[in-house]
Length: 216
Ligand SMILES: NC(=O)c1ccc[n+]([C@@H]2O[C@H](COP(=O)([O-])OP(=O)(O)OC[C@H]3O[C@@H](n4cnc5c(N)ncnc54)[C@H](OP(=O)(O)O)[C@@H]3O)[C@@H](O)[C@H]2O)c1
Image: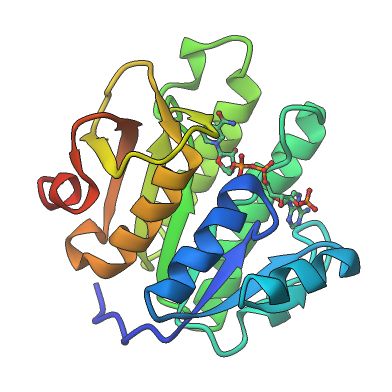
């Protein structure tokens, strides 16, 4: 594994999503420049208001220009529960894989993936098997990419107030986590090199985020 260059600018793919909109201000507060990738011109002013540099791109179209000038990438895009399995495959699966390829081509070494709990065993849930398969394939592709990766697998996401406390580890069982705590865990992972090369689930309760990541 190569030495990660110091990170000044982070690209967030999925910046207009519920996690993304919480993540962007946290990254800025932590001192990063943020390039916020959105699909729609109408989302550009909102990203500027958050303090980010917006860039328009579509995982199903052209987006690799979004990586320009970045040293790290956070993938928190997803097709959402309202679309069909084809969009899940195209965005959560192939969109993530193409993001890994783009990061390698542009030498963006640090890559944090927001995946999903259960991706290690998609057969466990028939109802969302296609979703977990897409996440699993993308996670495996990233893990084999040679990039300095961290793969976070949150449980069911809620919009409750963040707690600052998580459990992090292998197969944690069912549970939930606030989107704010997922966002804070992404920032903490970027700052804790020991999370490089690791894949782990995250749920609420437990220890302060940085302490929990220290025991990974
Ligand atoms: N829901 C859960 O309980 C749960 C549990 C574990 C993990 N996760 C994962 O956590 C991540 C973040 O979740 P969230 O609640 O923040 O999701 P979200 O609110 O649905 O946000 C997803 C973002 O991805 C963007 N996106 C969709 N298709 C795209 C494309 N073709 N090109 C570029 N961007 C695209 C969306 O853009 P628009 O804003 O234009 O629609 C949206 O901003 C997702 O990967 C999700 O699968 C979710």
